[in-house]
Image 1 (tube, rainbow over the protein chains, first blue to last red):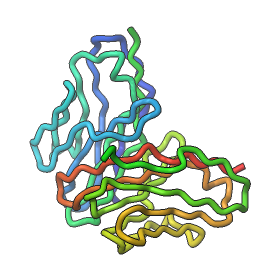
Image 2 (spheres, rainbow over the protein chains, first blue to last red; image 1 turned 180 degrees about the vertical axis):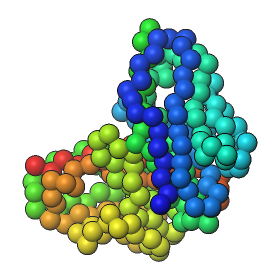
Image 3 (cartoon, rainbow over the protein chains, first blue to last red; image 1 turned 90 degrees about the vertical axis):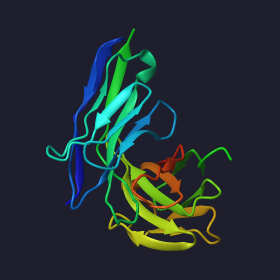
Length: 113
Length: 115
């Protein structure tokens, strides 16, 4: 079936450290890929997206590249800040589907000053 | 328009009671989705509407659950005879259409606790 697997948390980093959150997917067809972020007390927000192989999504210093050969969409940031502390969800949407997203379990990131 | 809003934000109910949640999507969005999120898990799709038509229901949506979007604007999700296993965060999202790069906007959710 279609699914998303992301690294388990929690992840604790010091400010200015490099961040990688791994995400791999299994999908029939050719999905679009997304990273959503959930800050404490807030709703899910789209962080970045990519719709085809080798596309790089980027936003707020975060990047992720759609790798079809490894079915991956790893999230990276070169220098994290305390304000990046949140839960990060990788998700896919199947082409031609009804538009619903399939999410991973989420990875909680805590950044210490 | 301030985004997707959900009401109530929190609901505590006794097992066996019925509960109803409301979602107001972004006004021009024709698609509306309901998801359920349990602790430590990602959101799981429950059902979606295009305008007033309910076009898909997940197998997670038992017959105790019913959703409506009567005028193609706000939506309600009702759970009858609640069970402890229904305790979760219920999320609503809306979007303009389901093209590959369309963003879905989420509300803050309704947290249900069944005691």
